[in-house]
Amino acid sequence: MKLPNQNNQHIVWLDVVRLIAMFTVVCCHCTDPFNFYPGTAPNIGEIKFWGAIYGAALRPCVPLFVMITGALLLPVRGDASTFYKKRIPRVFFPFLIWSVLYNLFPWITGLLGLSPRIILDFFPYAGEDVMRQSFSVAMKYIASIPFNFSILAVHMWYIYLLIGLYLYLPVFSAWVEKASERAKLIFLVAWGVTLLLPYYYQFVSGYLWGTCSWNSFGMLYAFAGFNGYLLLGHYLRNIEWSMRKTLLIGIPMFAVGYCVTFLGFRHMTALPEFTDEMLELFFTYCSINVVMMTIPVFMLAKKAKVRSEKVRKALANLTVCGFGVYMIHYFFTGPSVELVRAIHVPIPLQIPVAAVVAFIVSWMLVRLIYRTGRIAKYIVG
Image 1 (cartoon, helix red, strand yellow):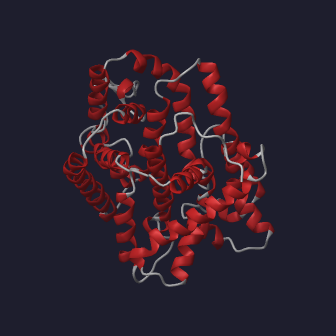
Image 2: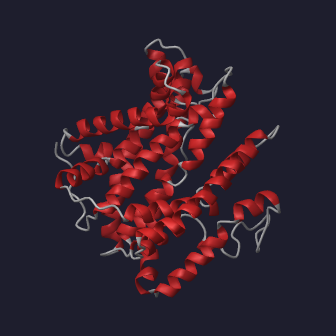
Image 3: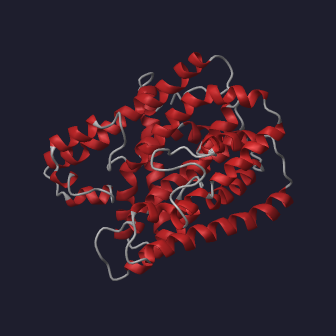
């Protein structure tokens, strides 16, 4: 199999971080049929409990991807146009191809004479519209791709974000390259304050620091969002902690972040009524509790020592397929959960076992696509 060339800056511990991010994002999407269980069951309480247990623990998945981007690409080398030509097409074309395929899926199931119920097995979020298995509905979703993801390709939200981060990186890089370590730390502190804002807006007031009905951009707007994870990845790449310090700081930090995430999510789902925003509040990636879980995972992965050349090559092989795995894994998470339920895997183990199945199938398919040669980069990056 011919895989893309590795980056000249190849760093083994970042392969470890990338593998963790890849697997946890697949695992995270395997929790969807638990947290958004379609229908009822005698053990629905146990199903949702384990969905929350795993769902809370897996929140670092996307932040880790963004931190890897910051660690590898900041500061950007070369001019902006060269950077854009190299990075954006490799993301855009697979995103477009797979977005179309996801949106055509319900219509294809109709052509094959399959029951609309199978759509829910693949996509727990699917609504009544897609259950019609209509070509016109598929085309409506496809036409909306330039504007947003559809309910059939929920995970594509990250690709819109990633393209935006790539557009922003050369601009942000100019500051990062000249900024002192103290200036970077000041930025991260200001960003840290913004991580509390989701809770302020939910529990105190919808407006703060200049935001109002005619202005959504408050005082710390320029410090908010995923650009903080970009800088955090860049900053922590050069920070070295001993294993003892990593564990002494990391374990309590992760534990506190996890407890807030898990208990907050359980509180929200126990309410008689809640909005989508309330449901996702404690799962918000740009929140203080998720950052508290993400930093220890990143720092612990930095301590990984991979001495075996075979293991290093296998790790590189796995991680270089990561973008393709992200593109296609959502086709397999739902069926993998159905499989582990059918073979009566104990509920506490269903999510990780389903994730292993979905990950392996996705990775093998990406490897197969790479055998097509140059065209593979347009399909799986």
